Figure 1 (cartoon, one colour):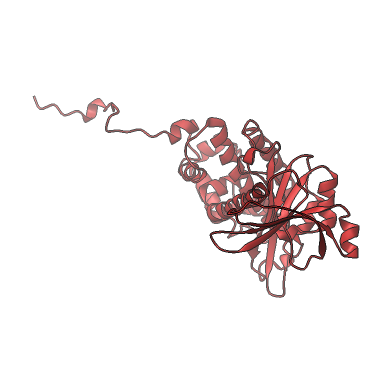
Figure 2 (tube, one colour; figure 1 turned 180 degrees about the horizontal axis):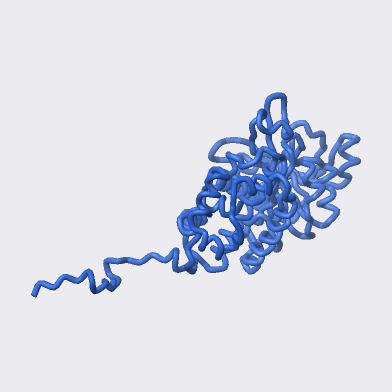
Length: 345
């Protein structure tokens, strides 16, 4: 399945044709038997997707270790993570088990991204009807770290779990949230900041779910004029840094766009729930393998460039830096075989 992701195969028949055309090279790659689309279809439906999920988790830890020495974002004394979800739409006729709305089917991929290297460190996959806020119950929380998320994750009882664990969160406040202002702080001029307040939730449910104080920051984007209202449990950082932390959340949107554009997540090899999950976890694994190669070998090319070159040489036995090396034939000496020499004497 990772081979299919790296080489842009569009069907099980395409995978079978490519691997059967070069049996000797396929054997060296680890394919010890004949690959048929029947065997692939059976494996997609019966090989537990949790195996692929566990392999992806191992690759996440390996990729994250490559960026351990990278300086923290924005001069923070802890790591900064972005949490978001993306919906992968499916056909209702082919995937009735993924029914989301009356005529729609989908699965939802939740990802926690380490913003030091734009590396996923946690992911979960569920049917589209499950609300993304439920992923906060599964999230691995590390004290002192920062978690930035959109207002779709605004659930004060779950956010209080992060606060109680010693972590910091930054998200957007909904307009219908009931609160009162306990204190206000001055904001610097010409920064787009409109207010910096200490608030407490005013409703009975709010006081029960989050009994402590919160920080409310209103910011007007100078480029678009949109007003964004943030809420956080971090009181020590300057308000412009809080706004910048939320702006960095855009990195996870770009990661989702990259994965959907350059990996096989639009057409699926199987219509079963297990097969769809196998393909999605394989796509994330392929992304991580490319990211690990780039970080471990210090490759200057982008992830897209590496993926494009690997796609046409995935069965070649050549060291990756040599495969990606650029040779200028205008100045490099090229040895020509003697049979190509022309003797005019």
